[in-house]
Length: 422
Ligand SMILES: [Zn+2]
Image (tube, rainbow, N blue to C red; front, side, top):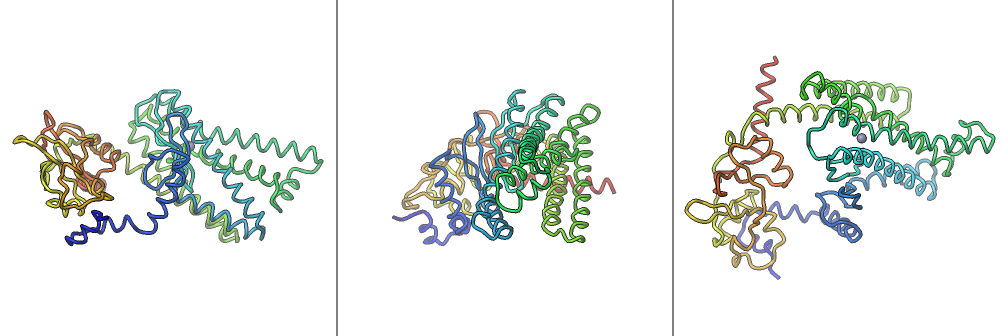
């Protein structure tokens, strides 16, 4: 069987992109994904394993989560020097992430209550992320959605603490001794105590009024009553950065007194908090810039244009170089399709026999020159495309807009703002 890949080699085109697709990492990732997709939903973004659907929300697990499991196995051996210790730690981590999932589900339920769609929930090694629809809601609803997650953890933490407390009373030993004894070896008491502490820490930490934490989102929503969204984000993100810097200093103190594992964990959390707060700040500045500009200000003519009956080989080089080629018909260039490297990859058959019409996609997003730039940015992000066509009436091709154009404009805008500030 002759595949497109071998044809590409024959005609000596660049195919680095396709070769990367066959790297061992992707093969492993595809195998894991395929295995899990036997039990769940086959459609999910790259790098995640779909687990199950919760109403209209797809729950997925990031493949890097496997590192957490490996870490738990290693720590189990390090702590207990036994197989049961390793199994105990894996069970503890899985249950902890079940609590993280409950946190995200609490956000989801409140979001649904006020009519906000939650597309998916992804469990990452650093916690969970609920991907919600961007729409305007009242500050009170925003606060409720933000606080629902930490409150769920505090409730769970209280329930687990209560369970340990009751067991300690029934055993007629002091609570502290009960917990210390329980943690010495893998045991149910140790497990419940761990979950109690983890949930209370998760709940309280997320209530810090610092972006990107839930408390920070609640604070921003409250500040929005008095100031603009951008200004409110700035305040909450600056608190986020300060909390990150403060936690890093505490981690340094822990390191000095010899608490290395705790210092390391706290330092990672502090650095993530600091960099995510910075990212929020940049994102909101970018968003306000994107709202000021229109697509027409950045769109440019398409480098290559093809017709459906043209041979694929004529633009293969451009496509494998990452270009997205619009397909048009007629004198007025009516847009009918789009060809991308993803449409060609994995296709079997002799490439010289293929026409553009065989591979082009007919469903894709478009924008008009009068659309605000943020709409183009959203469509590019959602479609996972590098460029999308710009059209005028009756889908006549007007040009293309690329992510690189938008990023370049944002960079220039950031530099301009920086110069104005200094
Ligand atoms: Zn949350």
